[in-house]
Length: 221
Length: 302
Image (cartoon, each protein chain N blue to C red):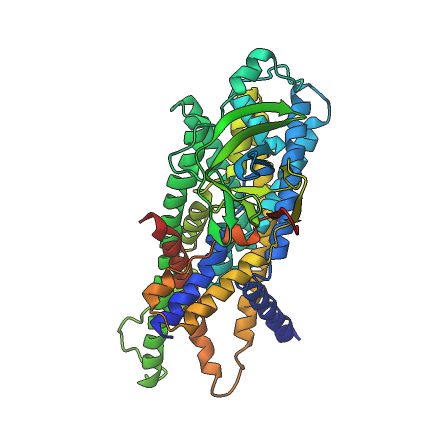
């Protein structure tokens, strides 16, 4: 077996181990698109609804709701605010916007607000676009964790104030990630890359298997 | 007939491994993840019920923890790789391998319990520090240990092959029946294969146990904060038993497949001799595989 092929086969073995380790937290992401008066997209509102188990962990960890009735007092409500607002520098917020195949730059989060509802902690924040995007440009939105520690899903299409938009919400394809990986390895073999280069094959597994939203606004949508 | 059954084991195991590597099991993994999510939510419900003192909540929590362990173990994991490769590569009786699977799952639960208990009471660590510790430091330590299990198996495989080579040479220079030549024979491959089983077992269990499941940590931290840590301990052990169901299945498959690969070789004829080399080769291969996977997992951290 040539060194190159053995490297690739090692990669193949490792891929399922590393890439699709188990998620531990499940989050339903709610999105809303905000346009300015000229119809340009300026902000994306994000709501994370944590699964009940992780929600209980957060609530207990903060020492809230000791009577267990699922309702927070005003003080407890205040104590919950900003529990997940302390982002490490450069954290992407697991929100990815693409227009014309180009990733859009987003500014840091603002306007954090959290509540506890039906056993779930729901935390909201707003991400401004670094530059407003012409609202008629087709847009793709994904929410996913490249490390797959959290499994995100987008259960509902995003709320949009404009009334001339068509939204297409696509559920993630569990097979897409594996297919993408096989394709990348096949291409690398076909390219006659060296083993060192082949080692560097990276596939954004989270993106290929994630739920995604396509938005088209304006005339012709 | 017996040979056909053994060969079937090899075919089933190879098919599963090929499906897994090719991503063909993605659908099952997705299903398991959905189950995990549902069980996780139900566990939260049971915990809330427990706090409000509802009867029956204890039993339902333990049942859910067991289900969580099963669902969580269906995905890829280091425990299944170790048990599978060890069972396929080394000559381990099924009962012993199954025992090792259960022991390592329970030991893994024990690690989580010790980590949370010690982390909170002795070191006064917070939730974030505890989970980070488990996600990074313990994963690394466990991976190093797993790599050494691999190297250990590979080295033993090599010794078996060398012992076989020695035995063959010996065979060729033809002693008489009453040779009495007095020189020491090296250990036979069978002897090499059968010894050191305790050390093997300890390494296998430790390699798996050193890496606790994050879900168990969540449950333990949660129950600690709720003042029902005893329930957390029981729940974690139930999760361990659930995980063991899956690893025991992997153990059965590994032993079955190993018999299949021996059945591949004819009992008579020129190829029959190859059977003597098979145990060493399988063990060497399994060891190298485990070590290679561990090193590749560690690489991002180096």
